[in-house]
Amino acid sequence: MKKAILTLILTAILIPAFSQDADAMTELLSKKSATLIDLSYLVASELGMEVTPFEAYTYCDRFGSFGFTEPAGTPLTAKAVSNFLMMNYGLSGGILWSTFRSPRYAWKELKNAGFWNKGMDGDTVLSGRDIVVAMSKFFSMYPKARLINPPSSEASDRYRKALLSAKENDQ
Figure 1 (cartoon, one colour):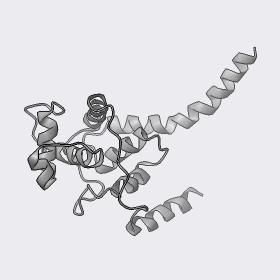
Figure 2 (cartoon, rainbow, N blue to C red; figure 1 turned 60 degrees about the horizontal axis):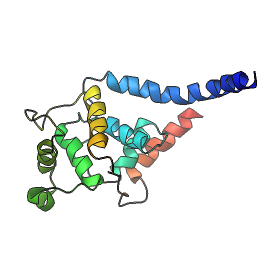
Figure 3 (cartoon, one colour; figure 1 turned 90 degrees about the vertical axis):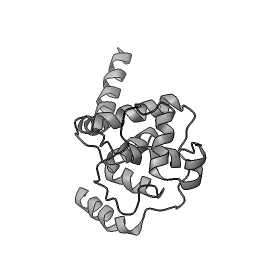
């Protein structure tokens, strides 16, 4: 009887805790085009962080690999994902990647490694399902890959007002 009551109490506590993650993943899977925010959310989820997608984006933006001209809602391409993975998970590549560190060569490195399909174009916009499958495949292919520490210790000031206003709205 004690086990049944304890199980019921734990279920009542754990289901609401995980429902936000389930809702966010359901929404992500149904998207026709994923964004940098979606990639950031998956990276933060892999790290075990319990954050909103926007908070995950501000965390991942500290790595400096998204590019200055791309806003957070930019549709995600295979090149952008490849660049983020190669730069921030410490993957080594060939001479062109080592020299130029551009998204084009990151995509070519992962494509040649079998991560992307051979006929896929680097500028293909990925859906939510595509990005979830890609992140799963990445951790299957590179099980020892770990996110490097970002070069800066805090999120950029440009997000401070947005984060503070979001916190005020929650209260």
